Image 1 (tube, helix red, strand yellow):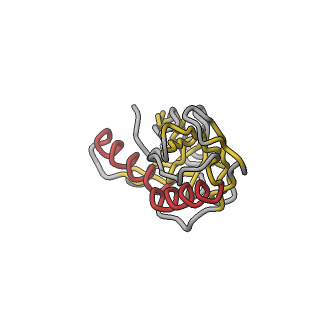
Image 2 (image 1 turned 135 degrees about the horizontal axis):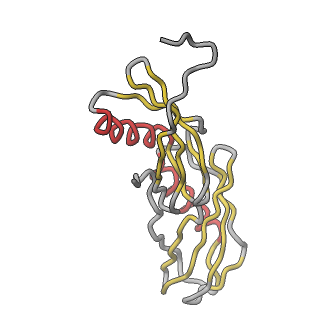
Length: 169
């Protein structure tokens, strides 16, 4: 079961020169990240000299909530640069909401989900994090895996375990 939890960055335009301006790239990437994830503009660092030739590739780094997001870019034409994050950016509150909606259908009653992850998680596909699902008074653990660079998630509801010291009925 996959849930979309993040958005990819769209292309940006830069002024025609023999090299692409690092400052222009950094500003555009920072603005796009801020708009996409509703955060303050993050710090972005790009190479000082990228040839303004179609096919030229480069890598920038953005700092999101103390985590490094690698952003790969390519000059795709005159005054056109495409950029794509190399990892997923998961907005934890959005992931919790999407998981709760899906699990509410599964359990046929309202559930709440709380994940043990920062507000914004930069993660490579395959990264795991845990969540707690509350169904009434029962709490269950959920193993969540980032499955793609666009922020798709899969999850597995772990078997119920009675808390240590709980009285047997």
